[in-house]
Length: 267
Ligand code: NAP
Image (cartoon, rainbow, N blue to C red; front, side):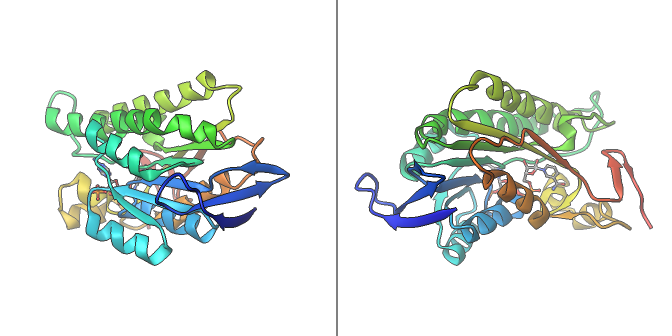
């Protein structure tokens, strides 16, 4: 991939032109949601090191700005659960070729009978409706780039169910159904769709799931080596740097010690 800077004359943000196999792809910008920590932060870093102009979105602006400064990206406040925040973000983000729908996570572990509706609402709003809003807002400009790409980080929870996990597994199943539907609906358009389904990744995910209980969060990874955020970022970066005719539809990745959502080998 060869990338050169030039003026856009269209937005106040700098823009790149990329020449790929003789085709002019007019914007080499990647938008990463949930880029203030974990998989999103690592993805923003790796895409920047591959020459992408990265626009980072999340709510914690202090962390977002720090990452953006380090990688020469642009930090824009984003709450994917708020239609007005998504609209304002999309307005400022400028043109783009890649969207990484990564913002999301889990809240709590409880049986269906004991389900906490606020936890369910949070998971559905963030993982499902957040992905819907971001995709609707940005898809036209991804297609206009001539080589658009939507990467959605779902989970092995999009393929499996487990006891006490229905809030998260149902949200990830729904997020995956939305993403996989787009693959068919947009067939024939210059846009690719890649779903990345990680197993256990050590990030702030478990800390947030257990609402700040660090000891409980650490126990999730007891006696095994989980994936790192960079492991997942590697895979996302690989997918979006393939030639335009190559679509990696689904990538399931787990630690060697994890066979399924409910089965891991621990020393
Ligand atoms: P993480 O470190 O907690 O990162 C979650 C990111 O989502 C943060 O940057 C957070 O930023 C952002 N976010 C949360 N709510 C948001 C909102 N309303 N608007 C915008 N951004 C929001 O966890 P992670 O593991 O990297 O999670 C990233 C994705 O991977 C999630 O979709 C998660 O479900 C998925 N995943 C994780 C694992 C795992 O084991 N870690 C496994 C499979 C899939 P702010 O709080 O600053 O807004």
